[in-house]
Image (cartoon, rainbow, N blue to C red; front, top):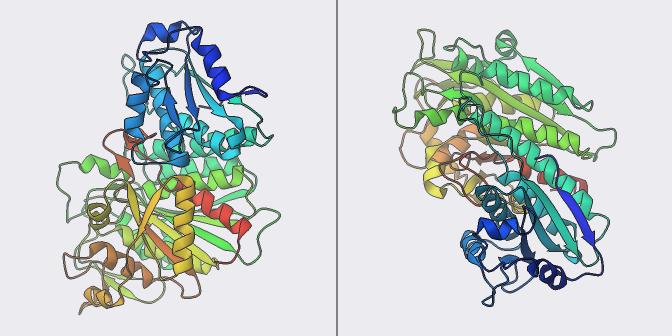
Length: 497
C-alpha cells in the first residue's frame, strides 16, 4: 500500500461524524456486505477514545457493539494504546477485504495527534501485505483495490500527515523484509540477497553498498562465512551497506549485523525434514538489516549506520564443512565445528569483527540463531543479550515504540566453560543441550571488540508466523526493521547510552 487518504474535519466531533454516517445505514450488523454497500462501497469503523482507555471499534446498534466490534475486540484483548489501534485498524481492513468492498474509513480523534494517526495507518499498511509471487496465474491474487481513508475529527496538528508518511515508509520496508523471507530459497540465494542490497543503495544517494566475495572473505580472515557457504553452488559473500548523512550525531557509529543464511539444511548434521522449508527464512536477520538501512536512508535520520550481512547457503555437498573441522578466525582464535547446524554464529563472528574493523561504536546483531530462544519465548517476543543495562533498556524502549517485544536473557559468564574443547580454542556449540541461546550469545561475545557496545537479538521465534497475528499475516514478519529505525531515531534525541 503506497497511499492512505487523510481527511480533516475541524470543528466536528467523533460522535457527530459517526452519527452522520449512521443515519445513512443501519450499522448494527457490520458483518453484512449489504450494510457496507449502503455507504457507497465502504464503511465507517470508529476507533475513538473510550473506555477501557484504548481505541475500540463500535457499531451504532442500541447495544453499542456490532459483530465487527466483538470480532476486533477479541484481537486486541492483550494489547493497549497504539498497538491496540494498529490491531483494530488491521482488523477493519481485513474485514473490508473479506466482504470485497472497495473502501474502508477509519474515524479518529485528530486531537490525539500524530502518533495515533501513524498507528492506524501502520496497522492498515502492514495488514494489506500479500506475497503472491508463488501463486500460479490462475490462483494469483489480484492487485488489492481496497482503499483506506482516515477521517480526522476535531482539531488536528499539521504533523499528522507526516505520521501517515512515516507509517507507510515503515510498512514498505518491513514488507520488503517479509518479501525476502517469503521468496523461495533457490531464488533468494546469497547473490540475490546482495543484488537486493545493491538496489536499496542505488535508490538512495546517501547509501553505499560493498560486496565482499569469497576470495575477499578468505583474504580478510573471514573463514566462518567462507566455510559455511563452500558447499553451495552459489558462493558466499558479505554485504556492507554504509549510511553517513551530511549531519550526524557525533561519536555514534551504529553497526546493524544480520545473519544471512539463505537456506539452512543443517549441513552434514542435517535437520529433520519436517518444517525444513521454513529455513528459507534463516536470513530474516539479514533481510531486516537490508530493509532497515533503506528505511533509515529514506527518513534521512542523522546517525551514521553500517549494515553488515554475511550471506551463505548451508548446503550438503562434498565440499561442505565437516564436523571436526577447525576454523581460524580473523582475531586469531580457532573454532572447532562440533555441529554444522550451528552455522549462523560462524557468520556473525566474522561480521562482528568487520564492525570492529570499521570502528563502530555500537553494534546490534540480529539472527534466527537458536531453537532454545524460540522455545523459551515463543512467537511473540525475541531474546536480547547484552552486558550493558542502559543498552538493553534502549533496545527494549525502541522495540516498544515499534510494537516489537523483547525479553532480556542473561549472559552468564560461567556458561562460557561449556564452549571449551581440546582441539581448538572454542567449540561452535556448548557441551550441554541446555542453555543453548545463552551459550550461542557467549560464543559471539568472544568476537566482539570490548570497546564496542554490543547486543545480540535472537529472533528464532519471531521471524515467521504460522497463522495471522495482530496486524501481520502468516509468513515472514519483517521483525526488527521497525525496532532498528526507532533505535537509530533514539540516538538523534539521546546520543549517550
